[in-house]
Image (cartoon, rainbow, N blue to C red; front, side, top):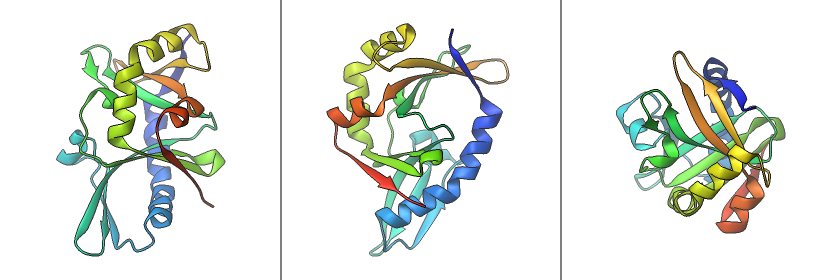
Length: 173
């Protein structure tokens, strides 16, 4: 049986986590000037959720995902809409430089370079999706119910990701 999540709940979680993401950005870049919210604007379709503005006219594009469960995995979306077969965010090139994965109940966030995470996904996605379907090695397939369609992701154990690419664990709160 595939675990079901519900999109409306995900949106609420995302909104609640925006404050925490800003705390993480402040930890990561203490000299931060401001965070520009890109969600719902055209650059978001290029994988950018925020622009983190730093001194020297520097703007760092980031993508942030927020979980309200304490699973020690990273949920990687590969199908955004199963009816139209729209690719998920792991399948789309992103202009983001950093990827932040916040696990709110554990007050923990993982940071990866987006290019490294996407390269790891591209090298392993077939195996990871198969593992998720079979629920082996800590992988699982997750479907999020939306109005008229499902979003499909694979939960990848965080240890597996950290064993393969450089990442940073940030604790807060």
